[in-house]
Length: 323
Figure 1 (cartoon, rainbow, N blue to C red):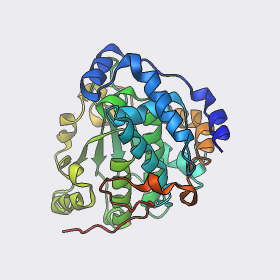
Figure 2 (figure 1 turned 90 degrees about the vertical axis):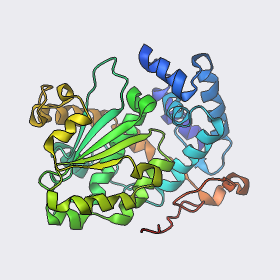
Figure 3 (figure 1 turned 180 degrees about the horizontal axis):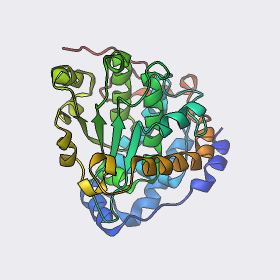
Figure 4 (figure 1 turned 135 degrees about the vertical axis):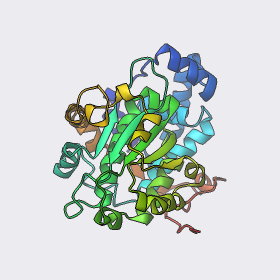
């Protein structure tokens, strides 16, 4: 099992050097010691190879993202990567056979521009930015879980190659323009809770904020109630506004496409780049179906983790108490 893992991740080997300003930030804020990075990666890989229940990606950049996401605490990195694979099994709506780069549904959602990754300038040390156009998909054709699935795939690509996301975290801008009652009824609150908890507990990139913009005034109080479905530390990072100008408080105008008042090309330009990027990860997502956790093989001592979770130790979701 582990030999397979080693062979299929060989082409992803190697550590990408950080730009100077991000490297300084990683040293100051993430406890990164550049001369020790390779030995830290080797220690995490060695631990993974000894875990009978885990079949993990072992590439340098993948493991480094978990070390940075754990501020180079090896024990926290072990826990997070274990949760990363264990918790996926509890969200089959997202992590299933359709999670492939060339899946027709995945490509159609990309082409609709539901998810837009906003490129930052070289040298910018701020968080990565993603816009989610929540009203731009047909609820008769797609389920909320389908949108989350594509978002999770870009989240994984971001984890592997976006240095800003790995060092400075990321923000999500939820554009509610065009949202109808059908979109609201299509929301799956338990899935939202589960995936938010997965992102908080298991993803190495750190969520710095969720900003709802273009929220119809009559819906603002309802959207504020969505805070209840996010993990505690995320709740205070959620903002809701009906003001279309609110986006400029989250991201520089110059970074945005013309449709959002910016000057950096069009949404279609971004969509084309994102489709090409997704297709370049075709083999990676095919191989990722071989990764995961087999709880029948878990060493009982590996489950002795003192960490509060929205999930049980086996990854089963626990219902939240919502006020």
